Length: 185
Image 1 (cartoon, rainbow, N blue to C red):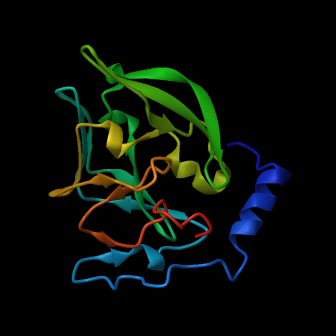
Image 2 (image 1 turned 90 degrees about the vertical axis):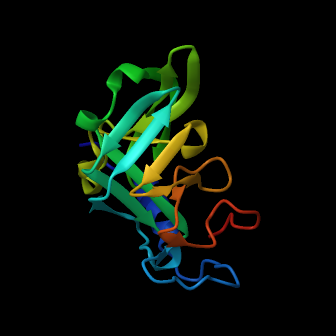
């Protein structure tokens, strides 16, 4: 597992400071729903037993009932599917990387199906920080770049803003980070 550098420890501490602004109106969850405002900070991973499916270019890119979901205050869940349930023939390593202060360094993948390519539409954490070790050998996908993503019987839509990887379904209520004015959430 990757060592957590001091700069990342400082970034984590900044996210834990009390008094961060929240939206004026938080929608209450209905029956069978969760509010993203009840999700933790710092984030956590948990097993998600419902079927999670990703489709692109006529291919099933991933299909699993052994998924992990990352939960973080103000964000819809991000789903991480195990390598065994991912069509690795459809993933091509892409240049670049990014750092998550919780999970570590992400590697990106283009998703390729026939003549179609979704650039940097998938990612993984091959050497995550120790407290997110479970996410190793799992892959996540940007919902907006795929033809269809589903959680159970619910079709997912992308988290607003284009940067984040969360999936919005009927399971969760917001408002969600990524909408205009949410930068400090």
